[in-house]
Length: 91
Image (cartoon, rainbow, N blue to C red; front, side):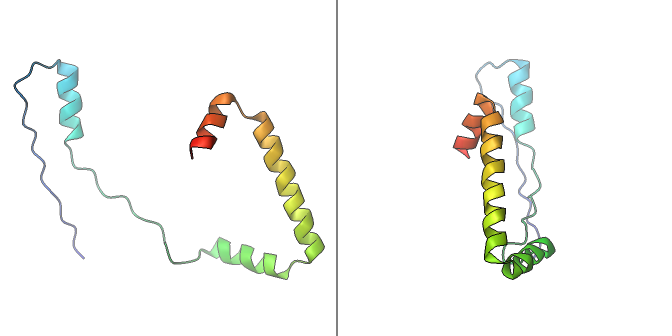
C-alpha cells in the first residue's frame, strides 16, 4: 500500500495576528508523518516468555508473585506526588 500525502496550504486570514501567532499557525500546517503502529495481533517474544513461565508456576508461586506486585504498587502509590496522582487518574 502506498502512502498518500496530502498537501496543506496555509491561507492567512484578514485579521491582525502577531508574528508569534503566525509562526505557530504556519508550523501547525506542516504535514507530520504517520506513526507506526505496534504489532496489534501479534505476541512479542517477551510476552510469550512471560506466558510460559506463568503457565508453569505453582499456585503458591502465583500467590507470592501477586502479593509482591500488590505491595510494590501500593508503595509506588504512597510515594507519588499529587501531580502524579492526577495524571494516573486521568489515564
